[in-house]
Image 1 (cartoon, rainbow, N blue to C red):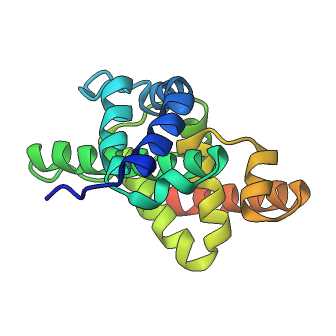
Image 2: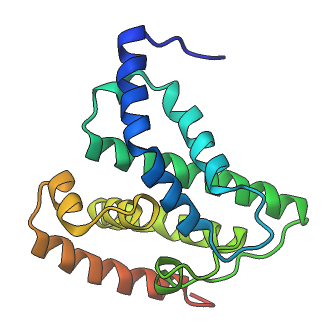
Length: 178
């Protein structure tokens, strides 16, 4: 069922999307780089994320920075859904570990690795919601430290401390046998 969004809100969302489209496409390419089996192109990833965003009436009232954060969440959801479908097609292939450093540096992001990172982020969100939001913004949204600090209402020094702590926590969580 498609939710109807008023025209003025639709125009606001369209403007935000147009302004962020190329950047989101670049980020989508970086997130999915390295997995030659992926059939979801950066354009398809951004378009799938857009379909999720377009039905959300509150998105039109967001600032550009907040929109990027919400778009990052939508792209994460699309990647996780695609990874789950691909693994289901392989009849339950195991979840393989991925380090956050590999993922952030454009290393492989296979479906199993995307799911592993997603599950680790879900657990981190229960332990430290702010750190999980920061990792999601950096990895899936390409947000810089000043942008994250503004979004979360904390100092850049706090973001950097949280980033180090989150990376250490995720490195442990993503380690084989953890």
